[in-house]
Image (cartoon, rainbow, N blue to C red; front, side):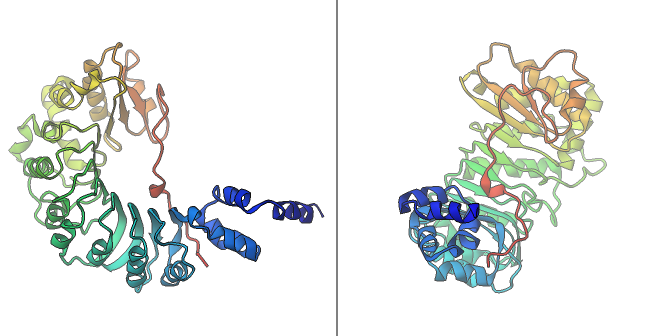
Length: 386
């Protein structure tokens, strides 16, 4: 009886108030639940204002699901942001292109966890006003190269995330970045880049290639993610690791960099470990941190971040000591070091660090709240749209 009375009370609410309530619900709830309550609720749930920024990342889209969105006109000219988790339907590419073509004002597009015959027809369908493109953990069958055509359409792009796209090669990146004005670039798990497999160049050559290309194509980067890019072990007898400035090359070529993700890089870990054993002194890392954080730490309100997840404790400890040596108590900015098990590292410290230690399992010293997570990286759940 109470349920009936409660529903009756909600039904008496005006449309604008219901619209306001619906704006707090996820788009999957609007489709699978709200739209089925009544004709009135169905009409309100399809209001264009509710579909300006669409996040369907917790649904695995199929060919039928995408066609449903098109048929109901839920996504269209007013849609400015679209986040999708693709399924493994072999015929999903055509309706996906139709979805993109229906959004001429799209400024943010994120797709993840799916299979496509080819990526470039999708890229060429994207509007010129696009500013953020995230393509995460996407498997592509044919790596054909139409990136030259895409270059002419990507002039407004400033945020590019290709996490988990192992098919992405140097020839794609070179064409892809030309003509852009990127400030954020994430290439995590793109292990073929910068002379990776099957070329398998030496570490010094790969880091030099990274520095040269990024400084030329996107010199204004604020964030760079190269997690799990340099995954090969250093070959025995590789004398190039005796170059003390290899790490410094990365930050030296990108003077505007504030956030750097070096997590899960076997080559870099072996390089730093070699120097720690050779010199037994963390001071050898000072040039890297002087270049990375030196001049920026004097700017009030600045936040610098370095990610070292899955680095061994000895390397992380050396990095912390070197970074902390450059900081003073009067520093108006903050430096955040991200890594696993910070409580283990804190046991090795004789005094509290001046920087912020933050880990995936626990925060050893939380002077500031962590940055908000991007909804585009939400973990997709196995659920169906219809």
